[in-house]
Amino acid sequence: MPSVLRIRSSETNFTELQKESFVCEPKSSFREKAVRILFCGDCFPASHSLLKERLRADDEIVVCDGNNLRKALASCDAVIPMMTILDEVLMEATSFRLVQQWGSGLEGVDLDAARARGIWVANVPASGNNADSVAEHALLLTLALLRQLPAAQANVRSGTLGAPLGRMLAGRTVCLYGLGATAMALARRLRPMGVRLIGITRDPKAPKVTEFALDECFASGERYKALAKTDVLVLCVRLAHQTRGLVDASALAALPAGAILVNAARGGLIDYRALCDALAKGYLGGVGLDVFWTEPFPTDDPILSFPKVIATPHVAGVTDRSYSDIADAVAYNIERLRRGEPPLNRAA
Image 1 (cartoon, rainbow, N blue to C red):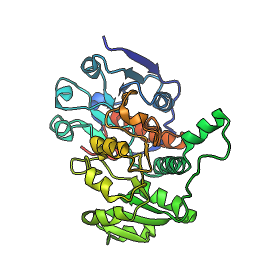
Image 2: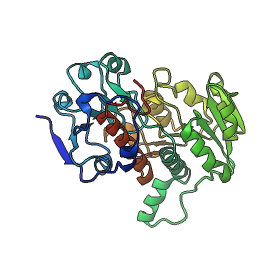
Image 3: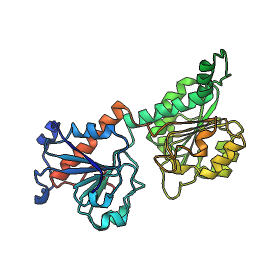
Image 4: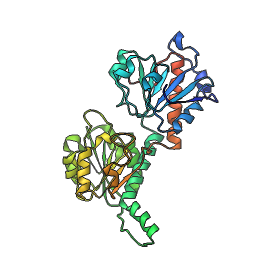
């Protein structure tokens, strides 16, 4: 049997949904029935209780720790994959109708396999409070690296005053690699701090670019020109086939010696071996990581032993306001599933 935790909802929070006039004809198999939702993985625990508060009293949440996942998938109506890869094999012998991501990333879901089986797939846009939360965390990592926070904490414990010597953010060039919602939230926070702000995007002439008020903007094909001017590089790119390993050895070498790299987007954007080599050579001034190549990340991985690395456990978007918005959006789509309606923010 899968190792699961069952949670019954204690309250309903769908007054507005119940008033809504739905256009689509409900599918009888889902009309007014209780819904069984499976969380694939026991990470991000706050998500379970927040969703429970928004569901009907007879809905059921099941949290599977990953053991016997296929059996758990066979008896649910909706799946929240979290950090689990849902491929064609897992979808093959299942009857669930909805894959609903808790957030925006769908790189772990086989969309073609879902379409072939008539399974709806949806996510939650990475905007609003989620983008603001990730931007705040990226700024936190940046400042902690510039001020050598781990060394400062160690000095408090050892009784050393007035060290280490930190670096100011003001006057430095920050490069936003990718100009989406998170980059916009970062730009709004960085501009008043006196930085020089540049960006890298596919189309630097797009109308939206003017909203960022960048000092310079470079096309993806000119990224080395941008990187050569960068003191702090913040990754704000979605992970896809073409962006995996985007920050490779050549990209790291294009940065000035002592530059800082911050990644709160997806771990696969950085070439792991190239980053290890750059850290071993002492080329980078610091690396802030909130996301990793495999998650959970091995606690004995060599990257975590470098003194210039500050790592946090994928918590950039884990805030009260961000999670409240996500829980609202997920619960809304669960209610649409109950009524036989396709989800909002549908990807398949």
